[in-house]
Structures are given as C-alpha cells and as structure tokens.
Image (cartoon, rainbow, N blue to C red; front, side, top):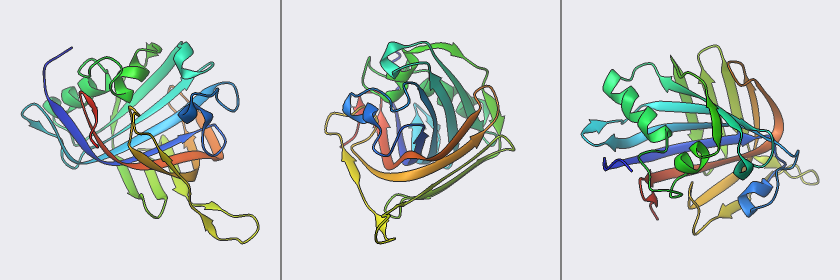
Length: 211
C-alpha cells in the first residue's frame, strides 16, 4: 500500500439498479441479478498528502454482470475539469484503491473486482445535495444527469424516511435511502428509474470510514 495519507469529507450520492434498500448493503444478491450504478462525490474538505482537494468533484459509473464480489466489473471515472494535474493524479490514486488498506474502503474493494477500467474523462461536474432532505442533482458534462428524491409513501403521499446504519461498513457510517434516477452515456450507459439511492456525509481515509 502507498503510504500517502489522504482524507475525503463531503457529500456522496449513489444510484443503482436495485430495489429500495439494495440487498447488497445486507450481503444479499442484487435485485436484478446484476449491478449497475453511479457514484458521485463532492469533496468539501479533502487532501492527498500535501495536495488539497477542497471543492472538487468526481463521479464513477460501474457495472458488474452478477454480484459485486463475483468480479468481472467495469468502471469509468469522471474527474472535475478544474482539478490541476496534481489534483487529478491524487483523485485517480484514491479511486484506484491502491492507497487504501486492503478491504478498508469501497475504493479498494470495488477496484479489486474490476477487470476493465475505462479511460477517465475530465469535464464539468456539478453536484448538489442535501442528505437530510434526501435530495440530489448531478450533472456531468453532456454525458450524465442524475437525481435523488425522497421515497413517497403510496398511501399517504408523504415523504418516507429510512436509513442504513453500517457500524463496520467500508463506504459510510449512516446513509439516508432515497429514490434515484440516472441517464448516462459514455463507456457504461445507464438508464435507472425509481431505483435504490442513498446519500451520506462521506468521511473516509486510507484506513476506512471515520466514525
């Protein structure tokens, strides 16, 4: 493992093709048998060694033919075009999983299941979101548009709130569950509607989630 210290604190939005709750969060198999997802992170406070990452964003599109742990996955990274070369290298190093302890972060775990990493894209990225309100909006150039909204109770019409608490999780401590929608082109096209989404206050480093 690389010895560079790093930390990312900010807003995370995930939308996948599973039903609300996502069985993968409970060591179950994905709802549709395969996994397709987008992950978006806005770094409010972050660093990689001496390189500051505050205010930058990145997005990942991912897919696996079966459950994630069975491998043969593909991924593509989209990096904030405002990042300097040093910042780009830093974010890609984190996303590679090689700067995390084995199994400690979702970057490392996901990377270990990949057989194809598509070339990264550097473009305009805009991420807005509110964890408590379960709302998010993501725009990546002209290639990706995604959003998250509260799940609506079919009887009362009111917003429904559910959380996932993972004391030993490698991605987050607590996440709010929402309904997501994504349209993406690029190496991994996505068309997700009213499927599982979660949002969290990301706080992670090479040894895992800060709690």
